[in-house]
Image 1: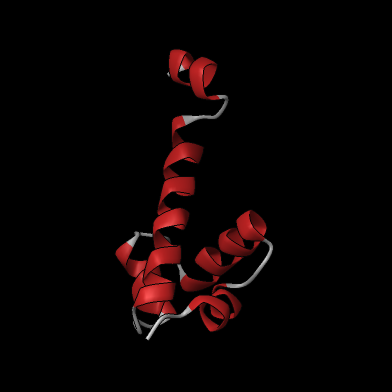
Image 2 (image 1 turned 135 degrees about the horizontal axis):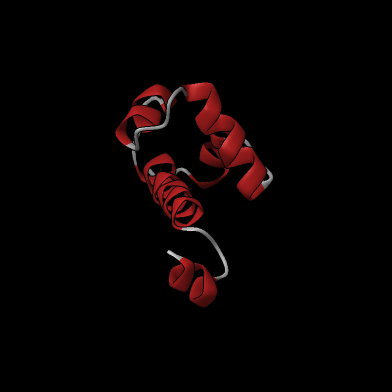
Length: 72
């Protein structure tokens, strides 16, 4: 684990959360799945936790992101 942090600059846990948040952007943009389903899909403990992490990471709420980037 120390080697991972040394090479990436972040912990494995943080790396995984970041990857899940990046993937959630695709579901927000290209699907009509509700936020609760996206949160569950990525195994976040709750929808509000997912929303808080998303906003902290990207500076925008998941719903606002969807409104800006949703593709029909």
